[in-house]
Image (cartoon, rainbow, N blue to C red):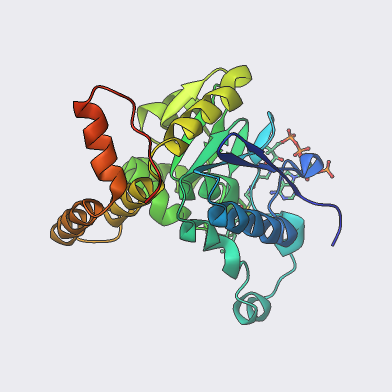
Length: 257
Ligand code: DAK
């Protein structure tokens, strides 16, 4: 393997993964996906970490899957090796993942941002699913997650034209949770991550699972899942502590159990 394609660091209780292929605008090659997945697993297993941030550079979150790596692949190769089979691993991570997006989030880069739990975007962020211009369609979840995120009309228009969406439109449509000045992107993402990480980890994991169930199940099933989840949380010390602290007018001390 050549030099590492990501940088990882821990700040407070937040694990930060920075995509680091600047010369290729963080194009997502096999090595990067492998290294990113391993870092996600490490952070997910680390009880000192309560939230993860995935970010890129000021110019590009990621400009998509690496076109040079896939351009000559044959149908037989992509099907037999199940090309990019490990692309979806990010959705198996239990801890919250914030995408801190500056610059281009295109194709697979946009799909990775969509696969995170929410996006905080810098004012220069640009989103697109330009795969049709390359003779393919989005393959990392874009047709499904974009349609759910911004609705059919806008998703169709984006995916059928491949056009770029600026951050103002992305915020208006609910694609991103918040827009911040570029120079404040990491500070804002980190402050948000630390706020989440300070809460009870099993409660946060339960909340993440419940919201995700909204996209996987019919409403009645999702509501039943939510009901079971909140009932289960009454088994936690952290529920007793959170409510006792409110009544006693003090800050809760969560012990993640
Ligand atoms: N792949 C490889 N290299 C890329 C790249 C990419 N996606 N994007 C940029 N680069 C490289 C450029 O080739 C260039 O390299 P050099 O020529 O310097 O060696 C360098 O990054 C700088 O790019 P530019 O010179 O083009 O920079 P500009 O500022 O002029 O333009 C740009 C920036 C982002 C508008 C432009 O680079 C661009 O349009 N890039 C391609 C964007 C794109 O089409 N992305 C979608 C790729 S397809 C799957 C899951 C997912 C996918 C597929 C399958 N499965 C689970 C099966 C995903 C597919 C895709 O993402």
